[in-house]
Image 1 (cartoon, rainbow, N blue to C red):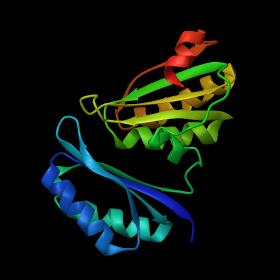
Image 2: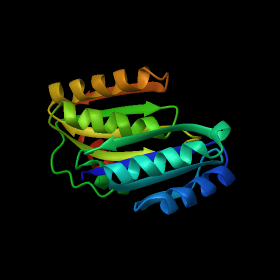
Image 3: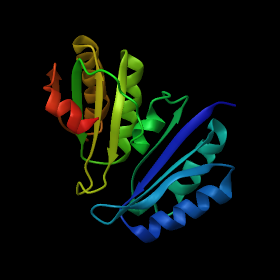
Length: 182
C-alpha cells in the first residue's frame, strides 16, 4: 500500500460535489481540497493508499462523465507536492526560478510531480485555478540547469494533452522578485 494523490476536475459545481461525495463513500481517502475554482469549475483532490485513490477517482469519473474535464492518479507523489499545494514550502535560496502555466487544474499537479522527480528542484507553489480563470501555474527553484530540465519535462507532460500555456526560467532572479514570491 503506497501513498497516492488523485484529482478530478468538473465543468460544473453540482457534478463536482456529487463526485466528491462518491469518492469518499467509495473508499477510504482524505479530501485535500474540494472547492469551486474559476470560472465556476469544481475540483476535488484526495489522498490515500494507491488502490483507494484509484477506486475513488474511477467512481467519480463514472458520474457526470459529460461534465468531467480531466482527472489523474499519482502513486508515490514527490514529497514537495503537498507543501506546494498548501503554499507552505520552505525555500532558503533561489539560484533560478522556473514558472509554468497550464490551461487546466489537473495537469499542473502531474507536471509538478514530473518536474520534481526529474531534477533536484524545490517546488515553491502550485496555484490551482484559484483567481486565474481556470488556469494554473507552478513555481520551482534550484540550480539553473536543474530548473531548466524540470521545466522542460513539465512542459512535455502537459503538451501531450494540449494543456501547456507558457513557461519561463529566470537565472538568478533579483532579490525583489525572490522576496515577493517566497
